[in-house]
Length: 231
Image (tube, rainbow, N blue to C red; front, side, top):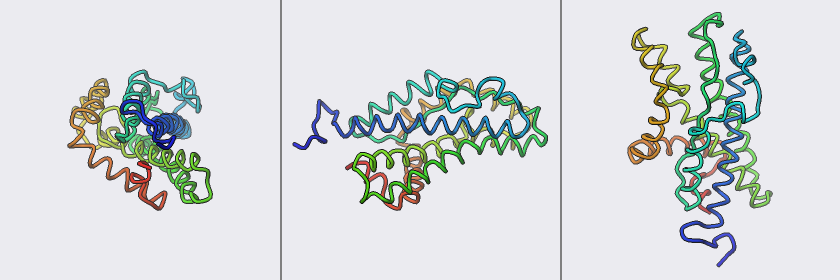
C-alpha cells in the first residue's frame, strides 16, 4: 500500500494531511477576512476596530471558541476520513459602530463585503498557484488546492443570510426598522444556526453550498477542485 494511503480505521494519511491543510487555510483566510473588515471600517471613519485591537492579522484577536475552534475541528475530523464538507468558521463579532459612518447604508455594505472580497482574492491567488501544478512539488500543489477551496468556501459561507454573518448584515438593511432589530439580535443564536446548516440539514443545504464553492474554486484553479481533492 502506498504511504499516502496508509490508514488507521477510517483515517488515511492523505485525509489527515488534507484536514491539517484545511485548518491552516481557514486560519489564513479568517485572519485576512477579519483584517479586511476592520481595515474597511477604519477607512470609513470608524475607529472602533483599531481601539479594540482588531486591526491586525493576529488570529488571537478574532478567535472564537465555538466558531473558530470547535466547528473547524469537527470538520477536520470529517476531512480526515475523506468526507469533504465545505470548510466554515466564524469569528468574534467585530466591534464596528455604524454611527461613525458618513453614509450608513453604503458603508455598512462596504464593510460587510470587505471580508468576502478579501477571501475571494486569496482564493484567486491560490488558484493561480494551482494552475502551475505540473511544476510544483506535490504537497505545495495540494496545499494551494485546499487553500483555494477553503477560501471560496468562506466567501460562500459568510454571504449566507444567517444572523451574525455578512450576508445577514446586508439583508437587514432591506428590512423595516422593527424587523431589522429582531433579525440583528438573532446573531446570538449563530452557533445554533451553523450547527443546523452544516450538520442537521446538511443534505438540504450543503449540496447547493458545495456546488457554488466548487464552481468558484474551479474558475480560480482552472480545473475540477472537488475531484482533485480526492487524490
